[in-house]
Length: 401
Image 1: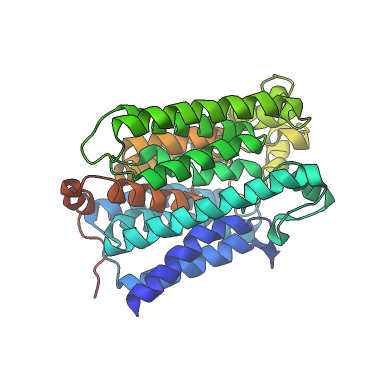
Image 2 (image 1 turned 45 degrees about the vertical axis):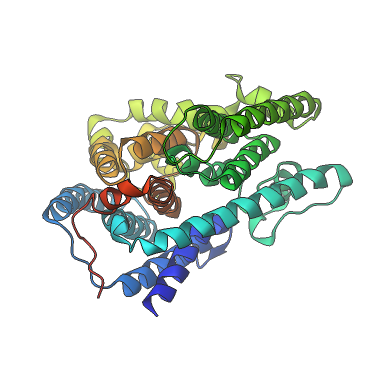
């Protein structure tokens, strides 16, 4: 029964990120699904027993957030404040104990992940084909208005709420180990190439990184790697052919102009993701730099603090800049140290790069989605002799009854 509950919980955590655009009683549907998955996971694995290091770290983070609560309780919606608090602590709690999920569930998680990658690949191809046949394959949970509908009709988003989120399903490939099967290599290569059909600069960056990672795996002979010399050569030739085919065709489409615009300093979307948030953070006084302005809608809070009008297209939406502005540099430093301790340096760096171009924050269900898949990818695709080491890197935090 507990294994069944754990599998349902893992599926809910993996699927929650698809439903960002659907709201229910003022909250995104992904939050409800994610919290349900959290409750089921805790019920499945048993009681929680944190290590002394985890408890001390939580106390430090609590003191920072507690100061936020008293400082901004009258300036920020109480609903927004406590929603953010709950999600931050749920995420930190899961990060503290994810590595103690029974290792037998990693195989299930990896299989579920590959199914989701395959489904996203099929949906992206269908949505891309729909551009030419005049039929929209937009999914019901992706639509929040006609403008959004037009975006999805002209820019494939797969199962996610927006095209850039497709990179969420690609970046776990960056941390895979040596034991990647041929079918997995083919699936991940095709999925990475499909990201070039989304006309998203974030997807383009991570598709390129994933393809370079897969090429490196093909060329570097490692123990447990199933790629023979001939299959590596044929794989590289096929990959180069597909890349040339994609880039000889895509520039002819009007949607490709968006990629060209994103490389221009006049593109407001890119400015908001990469530059504007850090510029606004630099203008805050020392107190707000240390402790943040609080979570929630940043536009009215920043306009009040800085006495300026912020263009709605220049509201910070990069995850790292949002965290700095909302929670302050003290919290962000502690949080990043915590992420590095729990996920490893490689996984931390991948998340940090993604946060520069996408709105992934510590109170986002997407953070646990990535963390769970990072741990799964490293365990399942590592040599068997490393499994015991990966499974016992942390002290026992979750005790299974």
